[in-house]
Image 1 (tube, one colour):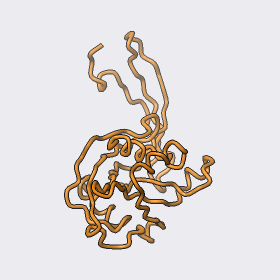
Image 2 (cartoon, helix red, strand yellow):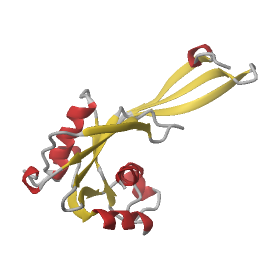
Image 3 (tube, one colour):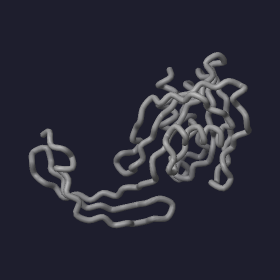
Amino acid sequence: MSTSLKDRLRIEDVRVLSDDWYLLKKTTFSFQRSDGSWQRQSRETYDRGNGATILLFNRQARTVLLTRQFRFPVYVNGHDDLLIEACAGLLDERDPLTCIRDEAQEETGTRVENPVHVFDAFMSPGSVTERLSFFLAEYEAADRTGAGGGLVTEGEDIEVLEIPFDEALAMIDRGEIVDAKTIMLLLYVQ
């Protein structure tokens, strides 16, 4: 069936369940299945906006800059440690390139001159609307112009980690790096 999705979808009802931290909606719709029949379904979607992430790496030193911070949703799902991640942030009305430059400076204290966009991905498409833009950028010691640490006003308390690239890969194997975006970027560079 080569019909556009808009021709296979009939939205019947949309209810806002929560509009506090981000937007949670329950949508009832009919979807035309591949055999031509229509099936009524209901889904909840969590809209937190789109984001961007970047892996900062030093080719000569063979190191990467990562962050370590508290993530409440990860904690309530049984991860009793701070999460090690690539720098990331929500777009908040910015384009992905501007966003990731700002976030790299805020979180890691690193000035990013020439980030390269490598791909976009939906991280949890069954329930979260977010599309994440993935970037890579090289850094040198001189690019580390601040302490980083994030913004206190956003509840951030971020530790900056400079890790040998091979050690970061080993940390995936040992279950110390469990963040999907970070794993994707590290494996992409590998």
